Length: 269
Image (cartoon, rainbow, N blue to C red; front, side):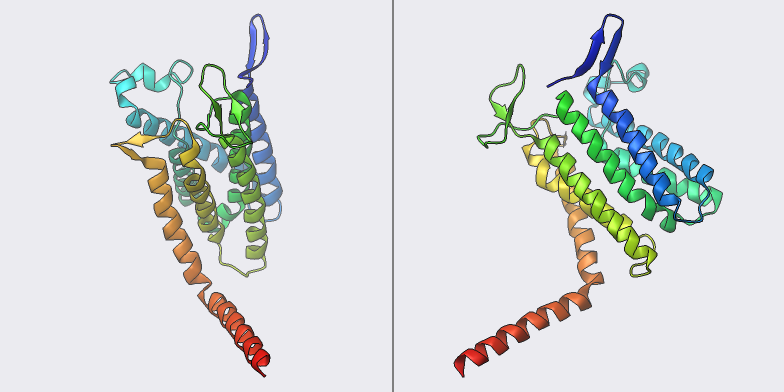
């Protein structure tokens, strides 16, 4: 792993920081490309982006402090000094981002549901690049495994899952899928805001699948909080999606049944 990309005396560039910059750049570029297809004003949209980033930082940091309160106590400086006491809770930061975007849209009187559709793919892309940075920097470590795809980490026993790398790939795939949903929304095949449901489903499903192969998981009250919250979201959003597409699913099942029944009848004859 390479936590420091460049170290020449007084200049030290951290790998994770470089990937975060790349994530912000490509996420912003992707958002701009999406917004250019709409009638939204660019300056207003990028104002919303920075407001959302502020909300993401606040929510993610506050959640992390509360989940690790024994390490922070009532020392306010520790809450603020991210360099000395790093840590942001990922899922809470996403929630903060969405909430602040919503509050901004209410204040500026533009449609949150229409706008958020164009933000979901860039968000997923940004997270994917960030996870790739976490993998290369060694800041997110998988659990021990005998799987042939594994990696040894300094000062840790055994070889471990490439969990952050798997997450990055899945988020890239999720960003592509969410973008296709946005294009379908533009054709009025789905309603505005539908990509938010899909985005929540993608994030929560990835967390449910991969959280248990992380070495250091978020534990609150003896529960793996990320896993259980994500599982609830998976069940809720997938249930909604199934209900939304119920007519198509019933028709699909009916077609399979009719084809199977007809094939069986032809075989007997």
